[in-house]
Image (tube, rainbow over all chains, first blue to last red; front, top):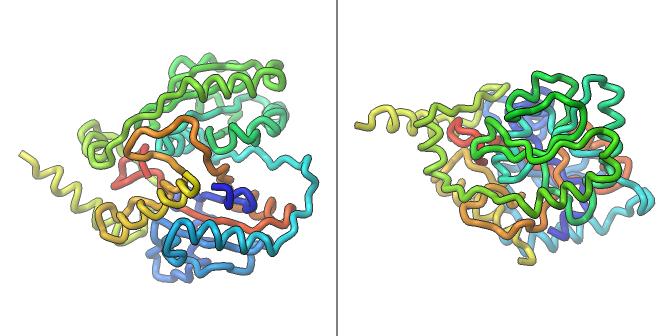
Length: 249
Length: 81
């Protein structure tokens, strides 16, 4: 975990953004439309030089300990050029529904910035910037921003008022419970306290992988990706599972 | 757990290799949907979720890039990597 702090950590969603999908195809050199659903690569700060061979996963490091050691060693080659006071932008996921799915998959709460006016939304998000990278809060929440009231629909009893919504997604990330709403004027003063409180109260789900999938099929909860899944292994596994599920007595 | 996140990554990746959940992702790395209860709040990686912005930040700060990608749905069911 410590080793990751010297890196800009980027986690993409394989089938949810066309240009990112194409980037990963180029990165892996996949030309036959079979991009795997997982990708791993370490890159230089300019994003051009590959520090490791792009693969599905980090097996080249053999052990987690070695991975941490090697990452620390690689990062030491680069001298950070920004002052300590520099704060990275809020790590927003592209869409609210997608953020809810990611948050559920991560088993984490999420934060939705909402303002009907895009310039005001930007101000709202910016005001939260120092808080989201607080050492105790880093990585604990997923973030989304929207100017569309429609996007708040999955949040049960959303008032539609501008501000910051702290939300606990359900197990499948298809709906969420609002645990707190902060008006835009309160964000600077209260966000850190409210996020810390939400985090302290948050109870992650006890998920069993197979049960989760079985129940998902049973309840008809399916996720449609923006780009059709292209990982042959994954597609076959899905077909097998569906066939087994459909033929059950 | 000194390298907890990395251990999760490997454990998940092993599952993938042996074909139990081919779609399933090493992204559990993030310390995400673990199958057991977890300490809350455990330390976590702060992921950037946008390639363009992430790469711009790396360039601006001269920090190397740790890039992963995955799908937040397993066998089409959301809410799990």
